[in-house]
Image (cartoon, rainbow, N blue to C red; front, top):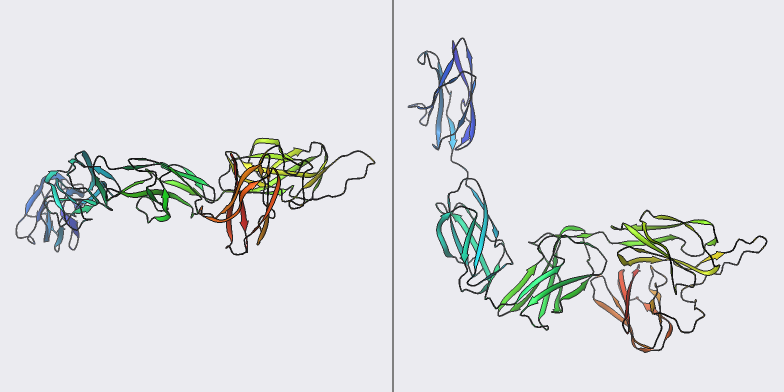
Amino acid sequence: NSLTLTSPNGGEVWQVGSNQNITWASTGTITNIRIEYSTNAGATFSVITGSTPNTGSYTWTVLNSPTAFARIRIADVSNPATHNDVSETNFTIAPPSAPVITITLPNGGENFVIGSNSAINWTTAGTLNNVRIEYSTNGGASFSFITVNTPNTGTYLWNVPNSATSAARIRISDALNPTVTSDMSDANFNIVHSSTPTITITSPNGGEDWSIGTLRYITWTTNGLPSYAVMKIEYSVNGVNGPYTVITTFGTNSGSYYWVPPGPVSSNARIRISTVAQSVTVSDVSDADFTMSPALGITITSPNGGENWKINSFKNITWNSSGSISNVKIEYSTNGNTTFSLVAASAPNTGSYTWQVPGPATPYGSMRISAVGNPSVRDLSNTFFTVSTQTPGVPEPPDTRATMSSFEPETTIPDVFALHEAYPNPFNPLTVIRYQLSVNSQVSLKVYNILGNEVVTLVDEMQDAGYKSITFDANELPSGIYYYRLQAGTFSDMKKVLLIK
């Protein structure tokens, strides 16, 4: 009979508290094994187990006896003096790794009200019995005790002291080894009086899908702030901890701010709104991430101007799209975009729709396609196409393509207000914007960049009812997406143009 220890046999590093396999080989008819360990290179041994079946392996939870001179000895229970083996050289029993504390609340941006009982929360990886909790009012430069020793339950109810500040931090440490294991709030939070104003973001507040280049409204409510309070609005594409990019530093406390998300594409976007009140920065951040998805866009490819389609023939209306558009609305005009008739209220966004061309005949046919649920994302035929009859022997009407800049409907005064698509679009550097007024109105026509900043005022005056057009000269502007907005009385509409230089 013989025994040969195979592990640990010298040079291994086994950590306190870890489970390790002691292994060996045997010959003969040895039934049970005694296993012992030494922390002094084999001078003395302590029993791990007095008897275990001779299976060739034993799982040992390494005891808390750190040493660089550890050895294992195995022996036949029935004949230990003759049949035994010891590790050939020393192995190491290493101290246990330090536990890891992670503060989850408050971790930056929260408002803790003086006198309230507010929860401090954290998580722990590893073994840790008790923790020390401290707070700072100067961004972590110095700390005061909340509790010197409390059970590591992952939560502690704190009666917030009368120490108003916008630079508060929490630090949690191992009560026995505070210099080895600790964590601090990632960013400052606020300790505020109960009367301190508050900001609450309502949109986007988590889960929304906002398309790049599409006008959206950031909304919020406040408590105790005047309407003239100056609001700083920022966004992050990297989650709650930022970094944040400024949208505006001069927003008024109106409860809303229109914004065109500039990108990049992100599923971890957040909005942060802040102001200074009572010498304390009051702020709020979106409760959860929202998405900034690729820009929405629709481009009609047919009919896009110049086609001659016969009444009752079947034609494919085709378009390209970008971004997340599920369904589209398709409309058709016979009077140069003055009014539209419905072709399909909600057609799948497949890029093609088969249409039986209706009457009447017209040289001023035009198609309009928009995203269902987001009508501002739309496109119009670049110029007019012709709808003609099929009467045998009658010559086809000439191709009377009109351009937006030259077409004028016969009616002197239009029935409705309307803002038409600019032509050409894309453009460089000139494009013509047409609109119509059904009554005399105070008219404002302004152009904005993709950040929502006004770049030029085209019209700001009282105008008579009728059909209007104005040339937008973008010679001094950089390439990009721009929005032109018409306000006439209670009528308001906005459309998009693309400047390509």
